[in-house]
Length: 290
Image 1 (cartoon, rainbow, N blue to C red):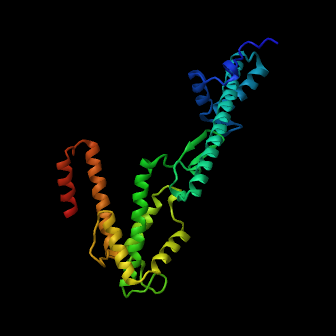
Image 2 (image 1 turned 30 degrees about the vertical axis):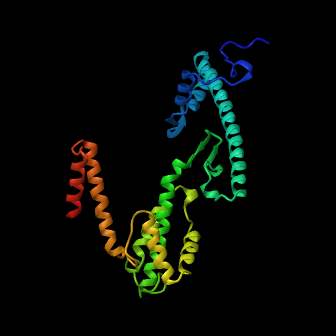
Image 3 (image 1 turned 135 degrees about the horizontal axis):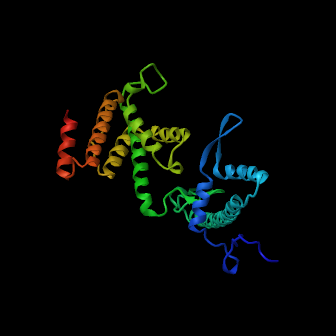
């Protein structure tokens, strides 16, 4: 049967889906743009494709709809091809996710920690509208900054437990002492901030925080002192044995001041008024001393 004039095939050679043309991409983008229509004295949101269909019916009742019909046929072809391409991407994502899961299962059998296996199947997100995307680290190089933040989070948790043990102050929830005045409060805040800025798969839940804290609390005072000192030294930040951080009531204003200083300096760098490393360092030092 002869194909109707104006219809374009959605497949290329060997039955494979062809790529969208630039015209079709632009057509789809414009068709999905939201506009405001007035109907029966009321405003309502609609896409341009919905508006065209409404107009098509109006024109059809008044005369020839050829111009609008041409647009509609091209739009239908583009939408059909786009859906076919998305289905291909979804199927591809499912195949990749299955391979990654098999690789993960094998790594676990060999004794690997599943959290650190990359690429990880949980980081591959399949979207029925867009296909699939990777939302996590792809290799060991991508993992490096995440490992550093996880290490710092755990050290601050360890530090908070040590400070509670060294202090005579009761623990959170056991008295009316404000949280900002409680021993270990600054370390707890830093641990929480680091945790919240990790990819979701690497974050500790509230229960996870509790379990990690309880694990550190089971250490003796001597073990806590030794473990904490070694943990700081391992990341190149050696602290004296038993060193503690000031409570958040003192540290908080300093951190807020530092953040304002950094924002100010970054603004000057973007504006081009600060360019050399020496000028930037001097400006930072000057502002932090205020």
